[in-house]
Amino acid sequence: MKTLIIVAHPDYKQSSTQQFLQHQVPQDSEVTWHLLDDINDLDVAVEQQLLRDHQRIIFQFPLYWYSVPVSLRQWQDAVLTRGFAYGTNAVLAGKEFGIVVSLGEPINEYQAGGREYYTISELLKPLQAMANKLQWRYLKPLVISQFDYMTDAQRLDLVVNYQQYVTIDDTSFAGQQQWFIKQLSARINTENDPVKIAQLTSILTQIQDNYDELTELRWTVDLIRDEEE
Image (cartoon, rainbow, N blue to C red):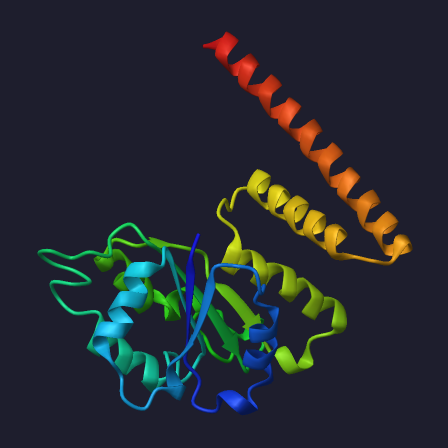
C-alpha cells in the first residue's frame, strides 16, 4: 500500500520528534515523506496528484493550540476542494486516513480532570469529520507523548508502532504477526553476523510457531461455531 505522510511543523529542523520519525521510514517501502513547511509556493495540482497516487494518507504534526499547525490548515483549504475531494465528481473516496500527533504535555493530562481537560479523541474530532466527509476510513491515531522524555525502551516501541502504522496493510492481529515475520526475514537476509542471524532466526521461528498455533485455534473455534449454527 502506498502511503503519503503529510508532515506539518513550523520548526521542523529543531524537532527531535520529527527527525526521529523520518529516520524510521523503511527505505524500501512505498512511503512518501511530504514536508509542507519546505514548500514556498503550494502547487495545488501537484498536491492533488499526490493524493490520487496514494492509498493511505497520514497527517503528522505537533498539537498546536488543540489543532493542526497553520501550514496544514492552509493545505486543507487549498487542496481538499469541492469536486475533487468531496461532492460531485470527487475522486478520493475509499482511502485510509491516519494521524500521527505529538504532544508536549503528558497524555494522561488529556482527560476530564486533567490539565488539558479534553481527550485526544475529542480534540481530533474535526479531522475525523473531515475523513467522514471525504469517505476515508479513519484509523486509530498514533499519539506520541513527550518524545524527549521517552526511555530507550519506549523509543524502540515507537519505532515498531510507527513503522507498522505507515507500512502495514492488514491491521488485524494476524496481519501484525505477518508484518513482524516479513520484517525479521528481511533483516536476516541482510545480516552478516552469524550470532545475530541465529538470534533473529530463533525469534522468527517462535513467532511463526505462535502464528500457526493461533491460526489452528481460530480454525477450530470457527468450526465449533459452524456446528452450533
